[in-house]
Image 1 (cartoon, rainbow, N blue to C red):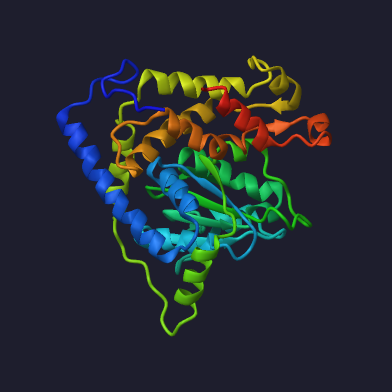
Image 2 (cartoon, helix red, strand yellow):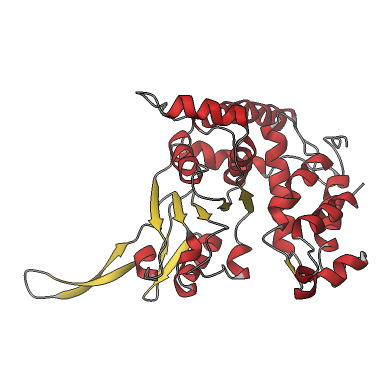
Length: 339
């Protein structure tokens, strides 16, 4: 699959200044990637996809069994990107006010009473929502407005969140006792779902030697919040070829039972991805191209990112699950249809 031309009809012609800025950002992002990979071993795809999400200004859902470095990845990125960060351990008794904050009644020296807002941990630039599916649906929904609008409403008053603002949530796919599945509306707000797997032998050996000695490597700051915001704005100016745009639309629309041409998709998929999936894939393809040192995305980017964009935005029918059909197989079929 080849990269589209820079001046393709889907995007306005790119100026020399834009190309120079994109190339410079690509070089800087490569150093951020290398610094993160110096701390996180054997999870290069997860590191790349999480960086892609942050460059797009989105939120990411990290899924993996305990001990694969999900929390370590979030902590490392907070340092490398120079972002303020807070962590919330989601539990069944966690309340919305524990995340958003609350108003308390104050009384001054003269006896006058007034309400004062105490900000919760959501007022940060990088919020780690650890084991997000262990909180009740009521508490999970407290993040909906924050993730979509970068503000929260408490007692009828809206409060703006810091910029940039990102939620990096973790989830254990195995131990499901006492958990509450995330609602579709919240899943759709995660730009990517990043599945973390076990490292290979060489990476696990390197990690073993590097993390059990007298000193452990510490990440270095490589970016500032202002630079990250500038990078997110620049990503949106990266040109996209017409063939990539059409591939994104074909992939997303092909995953919906209502518009799919594939009989198996219509039979096996209960509900498919909405327009936000196409938006996420377009942005993510731009960021992936930049991460690889390219000035425009290609069809390879669409194919590589399709699982991370679609796997949390689709659901199989009961009959399909009973027949052993997997969502990964359905997505692979959609990607294969792109040619």
